[in-house]
Length: 471
Image (cartoon, rainbow, N blue to C red; front, side, top):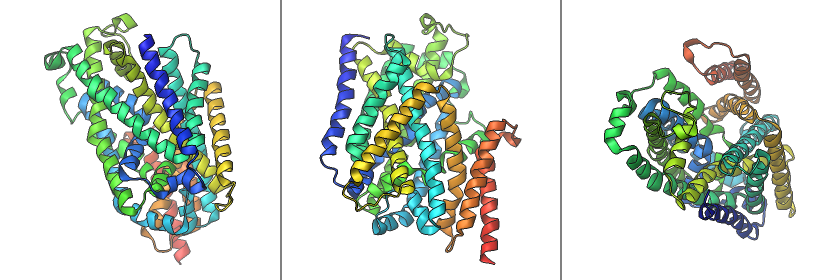
C-alpha cells in the first residue's frame, strides 16, 4: 500500500481511540457506561444498531451472495427490516418503560422481572458465551484482512493491533464511545462503498452493457431464491432482534420510548434497501470483473474455483486508486470494529450485571465495569490468536442463544403470567436441540435450518410446561 493510504488508515485508527478518551471523562456511573446515560438520540442509536447488526460479516457476506445469485440475495436483509420494525411495534413498548422504571442495564434483567433470577442467570451465561465468541471472531476477521493488506504483518500481530484499538476505546468510553464510533464508522462505510466503490466498479467493468453480457439473466431478478431459503434467513435473523443484548442496551440508551422506536425504524431502512442492495451490487460487479478476467493476476482466471466472498475485496482492491485505498481499508475495518465493540460491551454487561450482579449504586462500579471489559477483551484476543475455528464457536453460540432465548421472550410479551420453569426448560431444550443438530450434521427435512427445529421444540416445551403450571 502507498504511504498515503497507510497514513489515512493510521489516522482513522487513532481517531477511534480519541473518541474513547473523550467519553472516558464523561462517564460517572454504570448507567453512563452501559446505556449511555439513557440520553442518546434516534439518529445515533439507529446507525449504531445497523452498524452492529450488519457489521463486517454481513458486509462481506452480502458481497458473496451478490457474486453467487445476484440481486435476489438482498432478501436476506429484508428479514432485517421485518425484525427491526416488528420489535419496534411489539417489544419496545413493553421493555422500555420497565427499563426506565427499574434502571435495567441488560437483557437478562427483563427475564428476571418476568420470570426469576435462575432464568436471568442462565440467559446471562448463554449471552456472555455467545458475545465473547462474536467479539473474538470479529477481531480475527479484521486481523486476517490486515495481514492480507500488509504482508509484513503476521496474523498474531494483526490480532493484537485490532484488539488493542477496539478494546481501548470500548474500555475507556463505554457505550457512548461505541455508539459514536459506530456512527462515524457507518458513515465511512457508506462513503467508501456507495459513493466511491459502486461508481468506480460500474465504470471499471464496462457499465450496463458488460453486466448484461457477462451475467445470467436471473442475476438481475429478485426471484432467484427458493422459498425455503427465505424461511431459513427469516428464522435466523428475525429472532435476534428480540434476544440480542447489544440491541437491548440501545433500547435502554434511548432518551425516551419514541426515540427508541424511531431508531429501530431508521435501522430497518438502512438494512433494507440501502445496505442490502449496496453489498449485493458490489458483489454482482465483482462477478462481472471475475468473468472478464480482471482477477487473473491474483490467481483467479475465469472459470477457475473462487470463494464467492473474496470477489468483493478483489474488486475493490483492483479499482481503488492511491488515497482511496486507505478509505477502503478504513471502511472494512469500520464494519468489523462496529460489531466487535458492541459485542464486547454486551459481554461485559452480562458479566457484571447478570452474573457478578454488581451494585449499581457502588461508586466504584464503573471501574469494575471497565476492568471486566478489559479482561473479556483480552480473553477474546487470546481466542483469536489460539483458535482458527472461532467462527464455529460464534455460530454455535449464536444458534444456542437464538433458539434458547426467543420463545421465553415471546412468553413474557404475550402471556400475563409466564412460567419460570417453562422458560428455563425451553431455553435448555431449544438451544440444545439446535446445537445437537448442527454438531451431528444430521440431514434435515425440506432443507430447513437447525434453528427452525430448535425454536419449534423450545415452543413445544414452553407451551407444555406453561399448561401444566396453569393447571
